[in-house]
Every structure is written in structure tokens, then in C-alpha cells.
Image (spheres, rainbow, N blue to C red):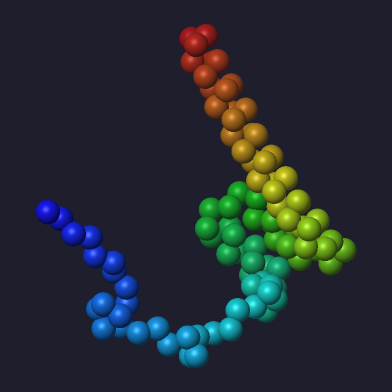
Amino acid sequence: MSTSLRVSPSVHGYHFDTASRKKAVGNIFENIDQEALQRLFKNSGDKKAEERAKIIFARDQDLEEKTRALMALKKRTKDKLFQFLKLRKYSIKVH
């Protein structure tokens, strides 16, 4: 017979100290400038780093508009990938 054990910090002698944790912030990008954010995105391999950073730092958009713009950017990237893969598939069939 096998028994399942719940793994939790208290089982191993660790305890969470939530009082000493950092408080959450509403905007995680509030203390960073646009160039630093752009470098962060670029270093993580984001091909649309500049455009993504501009969307996040746009002053004339509310949160909902920024969310829609970021989702549209993601969709355009995904659509281009599918378009490339479809083109590649057809070029392989022709040859």
C-alpha cells in the first residue's frame, strides 16, 4: 500500500514569516525607466521589446487599453509565426 504525504514548509521545519515579506505593488514597472525595461525585454529574447516597453509606458492609455494593446501585440507575433510555418510547410511540399 502506498500513502501520499502532503508536503508543506512546516513538515520540513520551515515556517513562513509573512510579516517580513515585501508588500505587493500595483504597478511593478513604477520604479524603472523605459530604456531599462526595454533592455530587460530584449535580454529575455523578446523581439518586440521596444514596442512592448512603449505600450507599458504610454501615458494616454488606461490599464484596460494597455492590456488590449499587449494582447494584440502577442496575437500579431503568434499570427506571424503561424504564417511563417504555413509558408514553410508549402515550400517543403513544392520541392
